[in-house]
Each structure stands twice: as structure tokens, then as C-alpha cells.
Amino acid sequence: MRKIPVADLDALRSVKMGEFVALEGVLLAMRDRTLARLAELKKNGEPLPVPLAGRVVFFAGPTPGLADGRGAVGPTTSRRMAAYLPFLCDTGPVAIIGKGLFDEKDAERLRSCNILYLQAIGGAGAYYGARAGGVGAVAFEEYGPEALFELTVHDFVVMMTLDGAGAAWR
Image (cartoon, rainbow, N blue to C red; front, side, top):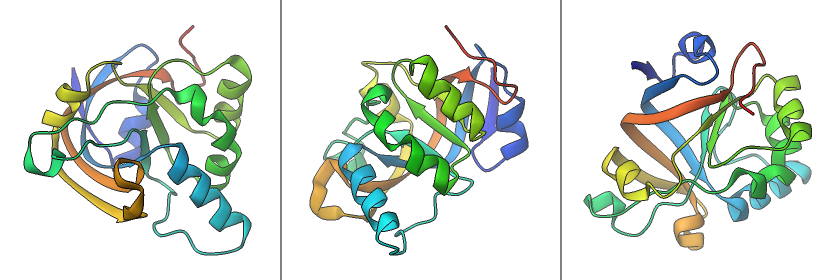
């Protein structure tokens, strides 16, 4: 299994559909509440607290205690986030990580925006929490686990579900 630095966009784009990789680097973790707030900021012409362009977004919310090495960070169901795909297409993350498949319409939207989709393992929050060496809220701390977080990960195993060539897992 290849280790891929999150910041190495060419390496990320070289991963083939169905391939498992171990990600290394900083992810942006967010859930629907934060996505809604970010989309509202953009709609109102206000700056986002962090740029999303070129980043990897993980649909997840860390549990309390993760920063102390005793929490979890499980993936959130991606279809719940489908309403925010137009916003994500406009803001340019290179990839999204979530749980489960998007429907064909949403997969096509991701393809057209050149956004990769990787799947995390559902029910593996403790596993992923053990691979988060650093966590910090960067915005919306009042949302608790649904704040916007940066997670520094190592050996973070995910599967490519929609690759750079547009091949999608079915």
C-alpha cells in the first residue's frame, strides 16, 4: 500500500479507483453544520476562515478527547453532504473523504469539478482517531465536534472511489 502525502496533488491524482492508500498530512474535517455555515459565508461574499482550494476535506467530526489521544474521528455519510457539492465545486478542494457512495448524479458533479472521492471505513472512528496525531479547531468552535478542524494524520487508510481519470466504484 502506498503512502501518499495529502499535499502531493499529483500523487493523489495517480491513485486508481479501488486502490487503498495511506494518507499522510493535514485534512480539513467538517460536517453538515460547518458546510452550511461556510456556504452561507460564501453566498454573502464573506471570506472563508480557511481556503479549501487544493485541500482534502474529510466529512467527519472528532469526538472530545481526540487531542489527548483518547477520542475518535469517524467518517460521516457522504450523501448527507450532497447538498453542499455545488459549494465545494466552487471552492476547489482536490479531494473529499467520506463514508458510502454518492449517487450517479453527485458522482458526475464531482467528476465535472475534478474532485476525487475517497471512502473511509464506516465504524472505524477509533482506528482513525489513533491515526490523528494532531487536531485543532480552526473555526466555529462553538459547534463542538461539528466545528471546522485541521487533522494531522498518518497511516490514514482510505480507498479511492472516484479517481482522477473519472473511474468510479459502483
